[in-house]
Amino acid sequence: MKASQGIVVMITCCSKREALKIKRALLERRIAACVNVISSIESFFWWQGKIDSAKEVLLLVKTKKSLFKEVITLVKKIHQYDAPEIIALPIVAGSKEYLSWMEKSLKSCS
Image (cartoon, rainbow, N blue to C red):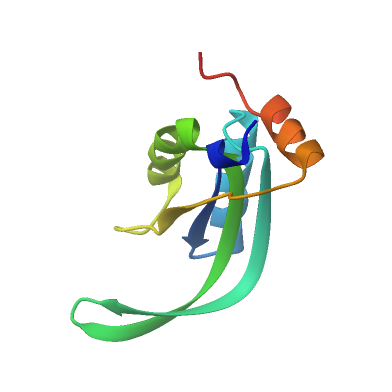
């Protein structure tokens, strides 16, 4: 896989339980090669006209651009938030070995 095809998707979740459920679903469907679960983050944001905050869990999902729509669809089915954070950042470079492993770990999009 070329680095330009890879993305890292950030998803915040309201609980560890929800994060683990999403992580499992993404991996089982092979639309994520790797998911990091980062517990105990504190988020600050605008919601319904005022600044709000929440203790959340962050998922870092390694996948490829061609699977992003599928990631969004799956996460929305599981996620409790009205407007879940599901944003992707491009992988601009990576080791050849890691990118190759990612490609082999993800389902084919043909």
